[in-house]
Figure (spheres, rainbow, N blue to C red):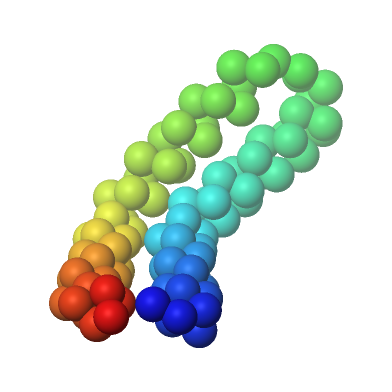
Length: 89
Protein backbone atom coordinates (compact mmCIF):
# COMPACT_ATOMS: atom_id res chain seq x y z
CA UNK A 1 0.00 0.00 0.00
CA UNK A 2 1.51 3.31 -1.01
CA UNK A 3 0.85 6.75 0.42
CA UNK A 4 -1.78 7.71 -2.13
CA UNK A 5 -3.91 4.67 -1.33
CA UNK A 6 -3.60 5.26 2.42
CA UNK A 7 -4.53 8.92 2.06
CA UNK A 8 -7.45 8.00 -0.19
CA UNK A 9 -8.73 5.48 2.34
CA UNK A 10 -8.39 7.98 5.18
CA UNK A 11 -10.19 10.65 3.16
CA UNK A 12 -13.02 8.27 2.30
CA UNK A 13 -13.31 7.14 5.92
CA UNK A 14 -13.47 10.73 7.16
CA UNK A 15 -16.05 11.65 4.54
CA UNK A 16 -18.18 8.64 5.45
CA UNK A 17 -18.00 9.48 9.15
CA UNK A 18 -19.05 13.07 8.41
CA UNK A 19 -21.96 11.86 6.32
CA UNK A 20 -23.09 9.39 8.96
CA UNK A 21 -22.66 11.67 11.97
CA UNK A 22 -23.76 14.91 10.34
CA UNK A 23 -27.55 14.58 10.58
CA UNK A 24 -27.53 13.63 14.26
CA UNK A 25 -25.05 16.38 15.12
CA UNK A 26 -27.13 18.89 13.17
CA UNK A 27 -30.33 17.88 14.94
CA UNK A 28 -28.62 18.14 18.32
CA UNK A 29 -27.19 21.55 17.42
CA UNK A 30 -30.57 22.95 16.36
CA UNK A 31 -32.37 21.57 19.41
CA UNK A 32 -29.64 22.90 21.71
CA UNK A 33 -29.84 26.38 20.22
CA UNK A 34 -33.64 26.43 20.45
CA UNK A 35 -33.57 25.30 24.08
CA UNK A 36 -30.85 27.85 24.89
CA UNK A 37 -32.93 30.64 23.39
CA UNK A 38 -35.97 29.50 25.36
CA UNK A 39 -33.89 29.41 28.54
CA UNK A 40 -32.55 32.89 27.88
CA UNK A 41 -36.04 34.28 27.23
CA UNK A 42 -37.64 32.66 30.27
CA UNK A 43 -34.53 32.93 32.48
CA UNK A 44 -34.86 29.29 33.51
CA UNK A 45 -31.36 27.86 33.90
CA UNK A 46 -31.99 24.18 34.46
CA UNK A 47 -29.39 21.77 33.09
CA UNK A 48 -31.79 18.83 32.79
CA UNK A 49 -34.06 20.92 30.57
CA UNK A 50 -31.52 20.69 27.75
CA UNK A 51 -30.76 17.00 28.17
CA UNK A 52 -34.21 15.46 27.69
CA UNK A 53 -35.18 17.27 24.45
CA UNK A 54 -31.78 16.50 22.93
CA UNK A 55 -32.17 12.85 23.89
CA UNK A 56 -35.62 12.69 22.31
CA UNK A 57 -34.40 14.52 19.19
CA UNK A 58 -31.46 12.12 18.77
CA UNK A 59 -33.82 9.15 19.15
CA UNK A 60 -36.19 10.54 16.52
CA UNK A 61 -33.25 11.37 14.27
CA UNK A 62 -31.94 7.82 14.58
CA UNK A 63 -35.39 6.49 13.64
CA UNK A 64 -35.52 8.74 10.58
CA UNK A 65 -31.89 8.61 9.42
CA UNK A 66 -30.91 5.21 10.84
CA UNK A 67 -31.53 3.10 7.74
CA UNK A 68 -29.64 5.55 5.52
CA UNK A 69 -26.77 5.75 8.01
CA UNK A 70 -26.55 1.97 8.18
CA UNK A 71 -26.61 1.65 4.39
CA UNK A 72 -23.81 4.23 4.09
CA UNK A 73 -21.65 2.42 6.63
CA UNK A 74 -22.34 -0.97 5.07
CA UNK A 75 -21.45 0.23 1.57
CA UNK A 76 -18.20 1.74 2.85
CA UNK A 77 -17.32 -1.45 4.73
CA UNK A 78 -18.24 -3.68 1.79
CA UNK A 79 -16.09 -1.61 -0.55
CA UNK A 80 -13.23 -1.72 1.92
CA UNK A 81 -13.38 -5.50 2.29
CA UNK A 82 -13.88 -6.04 -1.44
CA UNK A 83 -10.69 -4.19 -2.30
CA UNK A 84 -8.66 -5.42 0.67
CA UNK A 85 -6.65 -7.83 -1.50
CA UNK A 86 -5.40 -4.97 -3.65
CA UNK A 87 -4.29 -3.00 -0.57
CA UNK A 88 -1.92 -5.75 0.51
CA UNK A 89 0.23 -5.56 -2.59
